[in-house]
Length: 171
Image (cartoon, rainbow, N blue to C red; front, top):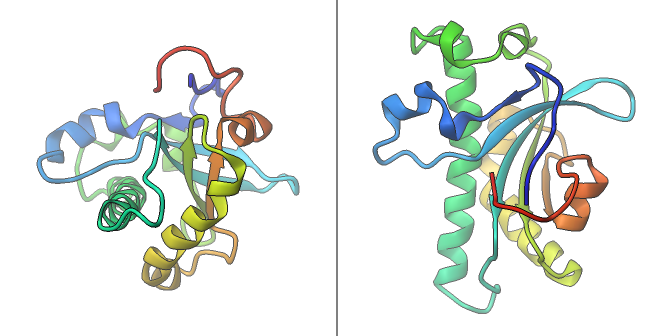
């Protein structure tokens, strides 16, 4: 899958950033963050992790480990971005797009998104339920909305404007 294109300054490829490179040892990170307008025109911060496959729920402990990895990557990306915007890392201007530094973090709606290329539609809901359960504490702590977790495949990624097509390499 090739993500984008996105408007200038609305996408932060955190996994490739200098900010992440400075702290990456033992810190898992999502692919990117995207400021995307909702249907109501309100900006929503999408934290996106992409995978080419996932284990099935019945394949314990692999499935549980996968869910924990996704949880950590999504929350770490959100937390690192917010920490940097709050000046905790000192290199905000060089690392984070201006638009992200201008976000009103107090009321910012957040969507934690896992995209799995080629995943069957019927496999999405069980995975979403498991990831949502794993993120329950963070969702409560951060007061994210009831629809803050999404698990989609490449068809869903197209529908939501994350990808134009499903050819090429993962970003």
